[in-house]
Image (tube, rainbow, N blue to C red; front, top):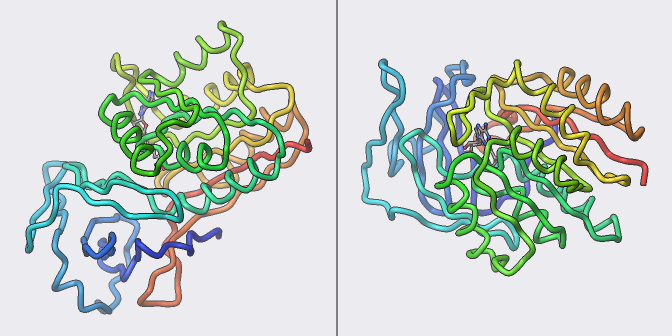
Length: 289
Ligand SMILES: C[S@@+](CC[C@H](N)C(=O)[O-])C[C@H]1O[C@@H](n2cnc3c(N)ncnc32)[C@H](O)[C@@H]1O
């Protein structure tokens, strides 16, 4: 398990009974997480003091209730990177803090490469990976189907002082975009993708992880440069196992370029206990050069 244990502005205080208690800056929130099937005692005073609580509805979706008025949005930092946090109608806050362990990995790889690196970030959401790679000196192409998410990512880049970096902001379906980039002859030294289990492109193109992931990774071979640096594939808890993702990267990227594939769960340390909350898995291919 690789753990995102370098946060200061984010803390996972406790988790039990299908819910996690998190501190975002100085704002405590409670959110559901179906994998928290244990029913341990509540070990934080903030369970009773959380400002916001997202309740799932039986009819699907859910809604927030607030004990205290909170700002519409606020900023938390991870080193130099700044993220706008905003509780959304679908329980997200605009950030997956466990991804910090992947941001660190990519940043070290880019800095260690000692050459110009171009990164393609697919399903890029609010831009955590984009900011980490751009902050390390890479040029980044950020692709997401949602106009609102791309704007949120641009705002995060501006908040992080990275607005002037070479970042292309693209609203498009990932598969269609990669196919177009192949036709245009564009190439990237690194690819990162964090696809959802289920999603839709801007024109309602259906994305279903199990059906589409292999084909998309395979398609991406057509946009990789002659000297690729890394290919990072992430999936949530309900998604793919590390071994399944490692298999896919071995049969595609490693088959074509050599190099090595590693895969592991990623997680967040829980302050109240000894354990780590698993938050999904990441497979990483690293090139030899
Ligand atoms: C849950 S997020 C990924 C998390 C993100 N990479 C991170 O760690 O910050 C999934 C994103 O995929 C986008 N998406 C879903 N289907 C898509 C598609 N077919 N093409 C492009 N983006 C898509 C959604 O808009 C959403 O922003």
